[in-house]
Every structure is written in C-alpha cells, then in structure tokens.
Image 1 (cartoon, helix red, strand yellow):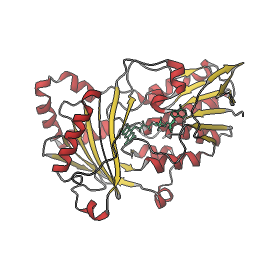
Image 2: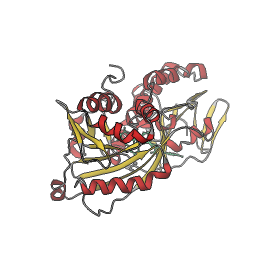
Image 3: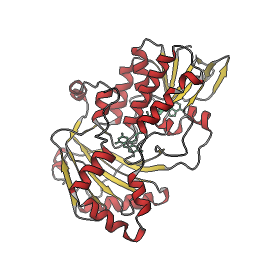
Length: 372
Ligand SMILES: Cc1cc2nc3c(=O)[nH]c(=O)nc-3n(C[C@H](O)[C@H](O)[C@H](O)COP(=O)(O)OP(=O)(O)OC[C@H]3O[C@@H](n4cnc5c(N)ncnc54)[C@H](O)[C@@H]3O)c2cc1C
C-alpha cells in the first residue's frame, strides 16, 4: 500500500493532522494498534480553544455523546476543608469522554485506517518510509502518544525528562447517587498535593464521575491516591468504598531536554513530541495544535520533505507551547517546611485562584485559539 502521509497513532494529535491533510487533498493513512472506539487514561476536560480549532459542531456532537459545559472550578488542598470556588459568566471548559471524543475525531478525519495494527518495523528505502513491510509513504508522522515507535526511532529512549505519572478512574454512577454527592457537574474540583508536586481532580460529566491524581514523583503515587480517595469520600464528593477501575499512565510534559521532533520525512506530534502543558498536564489542546501545525508545514512543503522544509514546524510548535512552569518554580523556591502553609494561604485567596491557577495555569485564557 502507498499513501502521501502515514500517521502512526489515531489519538487527537494523529486524527487532527489527518483531518487537516485530507482537507488539503492528500492521501492519508492512519495506523493504530488499538481498534476504535478505544478509551484513553484521561480526565476528559478540554478548553474552548480545542473546540474552536477543531471546528467542533458542539450541538451535533452533544446529541449522542457526553459534552459537559464547565462554568467554574472549586480549588483546594488535599486534606484541608476549605475550598475556593471560582465561577465565570459562561463555559470555560468542557467535559468529554475519550472513548467517544477520539472515535468521533478519527472517523471525521476521513483518512484510510489500519486499526488493530501495531507497528513492528519502520525502515527507509530510497527516500520512502516502509512500515511493517506493507505500507510505503514519503512522509511519516509519529502520533503514537508517550510510547510512540516513531519518537523512539528519532530519539532512542529519552532519560532525564520530567514525567507526569497519573492514576485515573471513570465510572457511571446511578443518577440518584450522583445527586446525593457534593459535586456539581459544571464545577469540577481540583485539589493540590500538600508538597505542590501534583494535584487530584474530581469531575462529574453527566452520569459519569472521573477521579484521578497526577504527580511528578512516581514512587509516592499509590499512597497519595489512597489519601486523596479517602479525602474525597470523607467530603462526600465520591461514593464510599466504590470499586473504581483504576488505570495508570505516564507521559512527558513540555520541558528540557527537548525531543527531536523533525527529521527528513518525519515529524512528531502530541504526546509523542512531549508537548503537554507543564502546569496542568493538559495535553489534548497541544495534541490538536501540533497536529494542525504539522499539517500546515507538510502542505507548504509541497511534496519535498527534506529536513529544512520541515524545520518550520519545530519553530512554530516551540512558539506556541513556550512558557515557564510557575507552579514548578514555586514548588522549588518555597522551603518544604512551609510549603503546605504557603500553598494553603494562596489557594484560599480567590484572586490568586482565579487569575493565576485557573486563568493562567489551567485555562490559558490569554492564549487565543490557533489561527485566531
Ligand atoms: C490521567 C491523565 C489525565 C489526563 N487528563 C487530561 C485532560 O483532562 N485534558 C487534557 O487536555 N489532557 C489530559 N491528559 C493528557 C492527554 O490525555 C494526552 O496529552 C493526549 O491524549 C495526547 O494525545 P495524543 O494523540 O498525542 O496521544 P494518545 O491520545 O495517547 O493517542 C496515541 C495513539 O497511538 C496509538 N499507539 C501507541 N503506540 C502505537 C504503536 N506502536 N503502533 C500503532 N499505534 C500506537 C495508541 O493506541 C493511541 O490510540 C491526561 C493524561 C493522563 C495520563
């Protein structure tokens, strides 16, 4: 089989890139080891920039799928009983389910699909990539998430990059039980760890409840999750002794040392490029934006995929995703013994929570959707 562009991975990064390339008239094939619909470990929260960039018809989307408008957040510290609620005039985010969202995007992309097909070999022959000894293409996109085989081919095994390790569970809760919980569907809750090395969330999307915790320290994750669950149960945010189907995942956030994301005839997008936000762990927007920027660069390269014609992608992505990790910096400069006190005070200040934690770290409200 041959195609113009072969994309490895059909998550938001791969499907967005495929969608835009198909609109430009290219012959695109997406290979994924999973069959769709497939689920992905995720809280399932997207920002308005994603909706705009994907030209999502939200009414049509919501007709048969979960699409929960979010108008605010409650923010606190794990173990403390005081929370700060911040609400906005309209939706500032949306809750989706990845098994539905990713499937919808991949179908809409209108690319040729090879699903349930893991990548076993990638080699180059006279300027063309040959994947699994079966598919030949001049341009290869690595969109295979944190374990992407194309990223491994370009970078080997990367060490020394900060990894977010996370546990997450999503379950349907009977409507009556949901109503008795102290959690509103349009105001999800975020609770920071006392050492500021991560945070947990509790998000209600219609009849689904999603809980999880992400940290920069893998060893303490199981104990930290157990403490978080006990805290949520005590606050009646989740049902007691519920059999949560826990799943774990680790992924790189946008930080040095950077990955090589461009080579002759090859680009990396999404988690394969390691561009998730270092403050919030948000990665869907970055997956979508890197997919769009990659497609733009490929279309402009006009069939000549040398490294210098693809290099503008790296500069565009760097300009879009740049930004220092303020909460990380805060965690480093505040001494351990006063961290909980400082964090507790800051998280009780509504203006800090609204303007710094939410507007800057989580929602990036100062950043317009790509192309606006
Ligand atoms: C617990 C947790 C919660 C999160 N919550 C949020 C959130 O609420 N909002 C948000 O914006 N981000 C969130 N993220 C981050 C977000 O999930 C990722 O950044 C995003 O999924 C990246 O999209 P992607 O398309 O790059 O990769 P993925 O969504 O991981 O897709 C990669 C695809 O590649 C396929 N693949 C992998 N290996 C191969 C192979 N060898 N051959 C073929 N196919 C392969 C996989 O099957 C998969 O379909 C969260 C992450 C975690 C771990």
